[in-house]
Length: 261
Image (cartoon, rainbow, N blue to C red; front, top):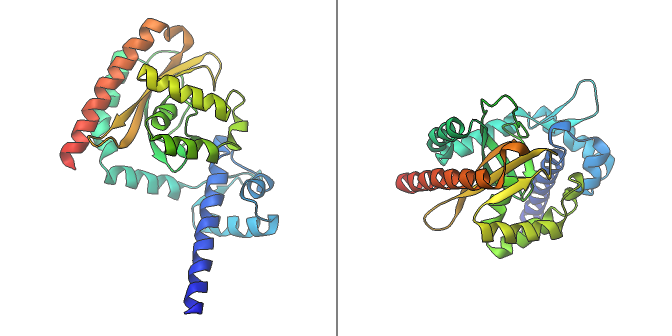
């Protein structure tokens, strides 16, 4: 009996370490993360971190730059995420909405889902406007609340879940100079009051975005839609128009998700 309990503990510890490592690498976003950064974020020794990272690279869950010491999430992670998204039907159902929103706005449209304490971009419809705001690629992750779509996801969660996510991401927010836990709390309050999320150049100067959650009938958050553009195309009146269009498409998507179960 004791042996079984010990095996369970060891297995759980291995899973916890793997998840911690994947999240630590994801926190580096497109630039990746170095060994010492990952060890610091996870609290593991450098030798243990190096050994576990090598195993994850071998499994295809991580990749290492051949010419630098940076680690990145591997294609297997992207493939698993896409499979999960297709399982719930969101990608397929939302595709027509992404196209309609781009055709109307001519700006780039994003679809994100919650993944733990992160927002994960699972689709992007590039806008035809000459100045593009490609601030997220498919597969990119950000802490919940960082960015318009991510903030829409966070704000739609119950209060306890908001508090948990903000606390869990507190250390990671240092990578985004404009963001603090206190600011996220105030942004959540404003988003709930306005009915949509905005990002007025907090991540990339000169760029703005509007985001709304996609809700199921029972109130669960299925994802978030957002439109990003240069700030000159994000005046107050147009922000309101964009929010209304996003809300209309989010409602359509939510209804179709409910219809298919």
